[in-house]
Length: 603
Image (cartoon, rainbow, N blue to C red):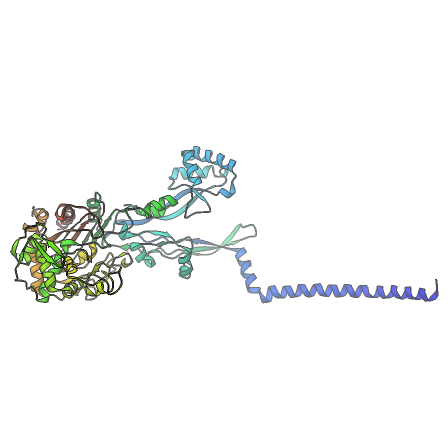
């Protein structure tokens, strides 16, 4: 080999030996730089975030739900409370089909339940628990113990324990009490800042909804320190949940039971009984009704649809819904006539078989008339042609003003206002605006409307609660009360809740005497036949055509005792033809008997 070539090879060898350590050094520097930067990023830049993750791995929070406040009647009897609820569920993702068959057989033998029932439950869809199948609900303590003894051999199945709302009287006062349901995702997004959790139940209707903030209480919990494998090391702190507040209602359990009973054979209807001096509601019932405990347990889509889509509409409170009031409206027309000066209290009118207004002849209900009579006898015999004349002569404005004075065409002020219908009192302005279904200017007010409105038909719709509030004015000497279900330590006789109605004493006295004659020798005589059983009563029967096309409604509205006015009762039988004196009056009488028996026992 030539000398020049040897020198070249030798130089190349020395250069390679010199570069290898440098490359290695640079590589090490690069690795440490990346590692250092990563450590800086984790510990300095995102240190608080990873510290939080570390704490969450080391600390476990166990949430304790609050106990919801109870609902009590006026005497402290429990209408709604809470109870432990045991249910059996299975998570299908944890077991195969063959394993389910074996598990089903074991559960059937252990809990004394048919395999068919378990299979049906396994195959149905549960709206509120899509991730698991609810097989059995409301397990007995014996069934729970049996399951726990064999739990290790029942993989995939579990006993769920929950504290649920319990209504011991099931459907009693269902529409007034309301119910609770699991919070929705939309509600949770708004209420999470107030301490709500996705597993919370929230008041959905009635008192449960109106007093949600007081009833629900506050969550508590315990902070536990755990090791890497999840073993609890120690408790770091305990915060007890705060129970919700008990709510004492104005309802009377015995009176409410009677109200529910007298409605039970009706296709639909309502009862309202209240104290006309304060507005305290003693009973409020609606038919058809529903079991409040339905919402406390898992239910299927079929069960849900059967309740919510039922043609009977059991979830609708008839006490808060508006209907044609018929002749129970006639005292309103009487106020319009007397207060307007168009038909004074002393005036007598000739009642005839039929009176023509516009294109229609409006008949007397007996087809004969009653001759010349005044207000008191017109109320006593419930003359239609008398009040047609009064209403038409007084005019639309006077009739509407009288209705407003008694609280109609407005909300009553009850706590559950979100369940309440405002009702309707038709007038010229309402008709000019389209009557709620037509175009403005195309549905003018006509004299036929005014004649119908004078006897509570067609263009007048009121709720049983509104009617009870109006009759309280006749019972208490001229004051418009605020109906309520909870006293809440308020002064319900203050000017804020008790307003003097602007009508003359002579007008009020004339109507009161007329209402008294109704039950002494008029259409309502059936309620006051035996004065040894009941105190003196005053009231008005009503038979109303259903403007929506159904059968006639039956009404009775009255108060007792006549002189002191301590209770107002409105009885309503929806689409029950035959007349108020036949159907509604006996209902009111039963309520009055229960109330008077209580009053006599207290004295």
